[in-house]
Image (cartoon, rainbow, N blue to C red):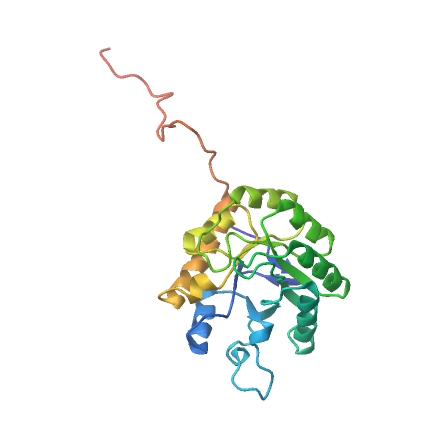
Length: 261
């Protein structure tokens, strides 16, 4: 089935799975898992990237000719901090596309809505391609789009929780109203969670812990690739409506009755 590519900042991507680079036991394993995922966009925490001369860096294991790097502002708790980190990423040559995180609570890692909106306005005005990580709040999602976000990235569940899509109904509302791509970010635990996100109509899924924390990260990366592809295909194919009662797979209407002639 033909499908339009995912587009951010004028660049086209055919993989709808975006993967992170944290929590792996080694850079070699990270590289293998990224390759198995089929992802074209790879997120990197700006604060974890060593500059030249500072020792081994995860960037040594990611081919920039093959992958688009998506720096993120993980660990930032204010709009000012997130904006400053985004500038550092651009100055370091990581580009103008940024996954924007402004965390509001250290225990839950839920976003700070006010700080996120403020940082989105500033960065969009300064020419950044802003992909904000947000709550599954349809009102906030719309305000982020109005502020210039190139996509909205609502959480499925708290970061690293593996709980899956906890509120599919809010995600559906965000999808109905959004004029930019919607990427589920955070909370995915296994392949079925990724498939559900795609079956809802999301444009993509971003994950890190679900792959890096698996017993076999390379196998899980492959499973996630297949799940995203299957979920997208199922969404495009159009599922049957849900019904309370059974509907026969082999209807008897039109079948001649058998009996004595």
